[in-house]
Image (cartoon, rainbow, N blue to C red; front, side, top):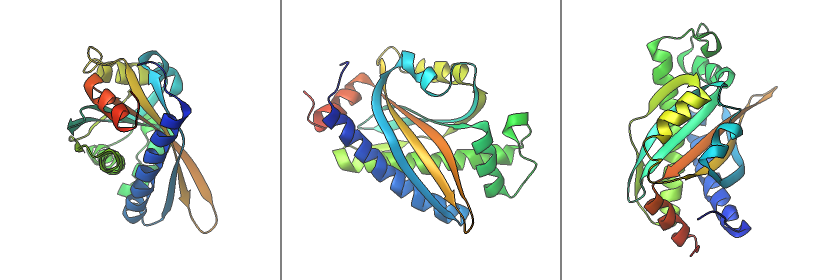
Length: 207
């Protein structure tokens, strides 16, 4: 299972945009400001491509990791730059001293980041689950502030014997106020077990 035609990628992108729209509504309520999310890219990638797509193995990032449970099983990562993670968490906690770039944060900041990842992941998975008719729910999220290589390697160890591909969803978030628009970039990696990935592809019409 190495290549997919453009029509499958278009369907994945459409499913992802539905999830992004739902997540944006939830985030808007949480942050009390207008949030837009869209998905410029959705594709199937090999594990070897993952680290390059999020800036290289040595880049420090904030990541939320969840397990996908139900009829579709696997792992899910949501990755933000430390700058964007800091800004979102400062807004959620109203604590300007939080700074992930300087590794200055309290337990509440980690909890806020967990909640942010949980909301976005839950809405994405709900959209995909409803669209393909397969139940899938997220586990309790785990947060890591570390280099991309360490985070991805640890997560992949849990599924790498069963799968060698991930669904990459590049997500663009826009915070909109009366006088400015700030863009942030988030990366989603859905890593279904091989059986679940084949189930998704069959549902999308891939033999």
